[in-house]
Structure formats: structure tokens, C-alpha cells
Image (cartoon, rainbow, N blue to C red; front, side, top):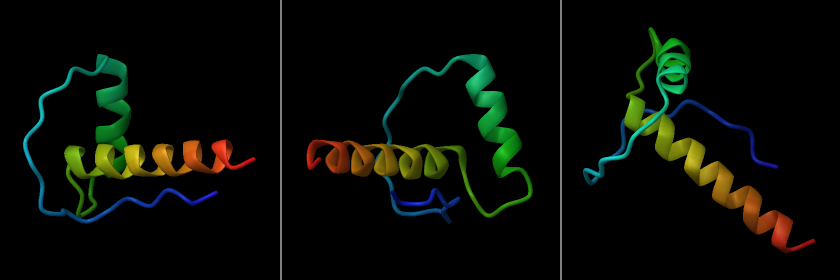
Length: 59
């Protein structure tokens, strides 16, 4: 399983989604003081989740 790492800011396309307030607070707390945006954090988390799903399908 791939280890989650807080990414630096990649080139992105704007996409609007809604998050529960507690999730937003936890993400913002996790990236505070780091070279990472909320969007970059979410993109990396989704990439890892997709990779995990692929690994699960391969079992």
C-alpha cells in the first residue's frame, strides 16, 4: 500500500465539491505550515484511494 505524503502544489483544473466542515478542519490542520494547498492534499488523497482500490481488485 502506498504511503500518503502531503504534496506540493501541482498544476490543476478547477472542480467544485462540498466537504463536511469537520473534514475541512482536519485537512487544514494537517497542512498548516506546509507547502500544500487544500486542493493538492485532496488530490493526493484521491490518488492514493484509487491506487488502493486497484490493489484490492487485483487480489
